[in-house]
Length: 61
Image 1 (cartoon, rainbow, N blue to C red):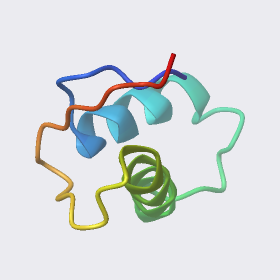
Image 2: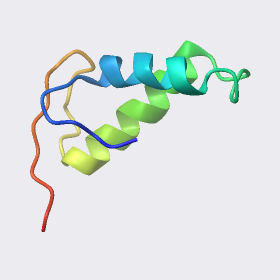
Image 3: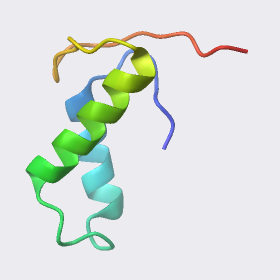
Image 4: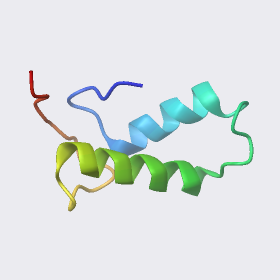
């Protein structure tokens, strides 16, 4: 799943749960949140990013 500029971590969590919950039924909402939060923080290089904060980033070309 690609990261869209102008979204939040929690919006991505909801989308992942909708799309992948049947396949990964053993993952809790908290598991999804931690996994996605850590990934987005690493990709955006913003370790202080809050889960409801809209994030912006530029991918290197």
